[in-house]
Amino acid sequence: MGIETPLRKLEIIGNDTTSILKANHSNLISKGSREYILSVREQMLSNRSFKVPEDWDVDWNIRLGPIWTPAELGSTNLVCWLGPEYYHPLDTDADIIAQASDRSGNGVIWENTWTSASCPTFTSPLVGLGSSSDGFKGMGFDGTQWIYSTDESGDGELDPGTGDFSITMLVEFGGISTAEKYVLCSDGTKDFALSVKENLVTGVDQYKVYFDGSATTAAVSVNVSAPVILTVGRSGGDQFLKLANLSINDTNITGTESVDIDNSQQFFIGGKEALSDRSAGNMFTGNIYEIMFYNGTLSTDDIKNLEGYLAHKYAQTSFLYSAHPYKTNPPRTEVPA
Image 1 (cartoon, one colour):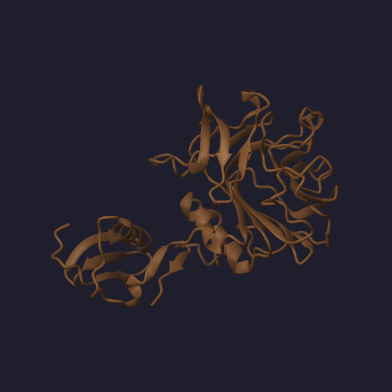
Image 2 (spheres, rainbow, N blue to C red; image 1 turned 120 degrees about the vertical axis):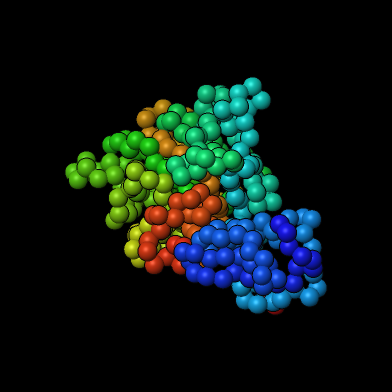
């Protein structure tokens, strides 16, 4: 890049719209939005061959750390993390997802050994990422496909018992009808489940959250025209559903639920446990790109970090509400002084 050595100072100058990256006060490296400049700087600092000198200037503008990831909530909370980098194709068909591996390090495996036709398939790249080299292809479900966690060993990675838990995902809904479509389900009795359904009276597509087989309907409608970041679970004994594109991003359902979600259960994505349920036209239609499971309580800031991470990774910041803390720039890891 024509920079004299050693590299003593790396400056970001400007504002969110137009910034420049300078080295050693004089060498212009790049110009663009602050978000773009931060990405250039991050590429430099993540380059394995680049060594930060001991006399590095420690101004605030070079202390912005790399983009925050879900792993930074810690292993005590993060119990399973599924992302497109860890979806594995079938040996004989590159379009079929044979297995989804856990990025959290807890070793939870997701698969479907029923038939290859009932496994999810790789989606097309999300709108906004069509020219991306990595593509970020998610799991696609057409109403006949599902995948489930294989951990029934009693280790309890996905099993919060009667405690708090939280599930955050980037999801794109397909067709919704009067037949209930189950996105997530813990078991056949719906100790926990998330579904969507068209309201016959109003004609509005709505979210439903189940605990112990009893459903609560969210007061907001399902958006089928764009991807959605949603977080669902139980906090302080209360059920909740949050959406990243609401103006206040607050709880949309209420009710105390202490039902035991124990370690004898599997979690299903795309449908319910019983085969008879999966043939009743109530399986999920749409795409799931990334999904994180946490046991324990997540703060509002934690959830906003997850929303910011997903929105920026998948170039979907337009549907974050205007006052969202990560509307413009992604969450970043603090760099120690």
